[in-house]
Length: 221
Ligand SMILES: C[S@@+](CC[C@H](N)C(=O)[O-])C[C@H]1O[C@@H](n2cnc3c(N)ncnc32)[C@H](O)[C@@H]1O
Image 1: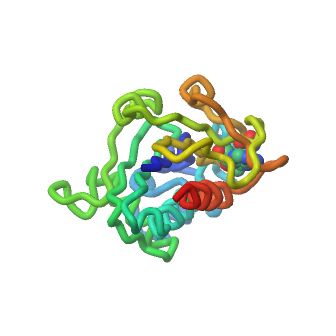
Image 2: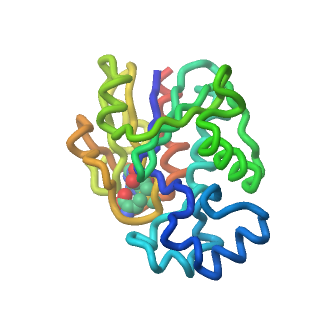
Image 3: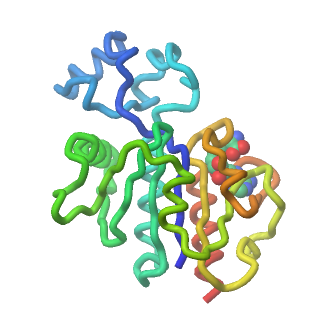
């Protein structure tokens, strides 16, 4: 089994500090929704985000969307060999049922995640496909789910491994991938992981790394 965790993902509701900013007011008016129940999104809120700490990397639900589409639609997941979870910058954990069929359309995905924040689980608490838990640090989540898997952190500054050699041998692994567009992990990922691995001399997009990791694991057979 491969467990993929998108860590420190830049997914959050619009912070109160910028609810009154004209870019946010215009956005929420257009969507006919209160700011406190809308996701922060750099595409629409970048001018307001200059007033936020780490404003240059926050508000990236699109990264989470791509990550989940790639992972859930993979052959590995169809065959029951994949578990995925998202850990956010505010220490929330989103657990994902492998049978979830996510909306391909981005705006519909955003609506779904806003419902998740609102209700705690979607489509229902009784039979959830996505469930959110609050105040769970990455290390605590991994301690909870880990059996005897090796933990690998993907990082451009990690130990260089050729493609096809991310995994030393067949087995169970937990792989951590950063869910942010720039900067480094905020969580103590290099302390949590047994090793960190780079697959290229340079920075790759999250979705490129996800597809290479899944492909490498599938080829282990
Ligand atoms: C867009 S990058 C974040 C960029 C950041 N400057 C960094 O150094 O990680 C997001 C994530 O993709 C993964 N990643 C990006 N480039 C990589 C590489 N060359 N090798 C392995 N993982 C990589 C890492 O997990 C990283 O946290």
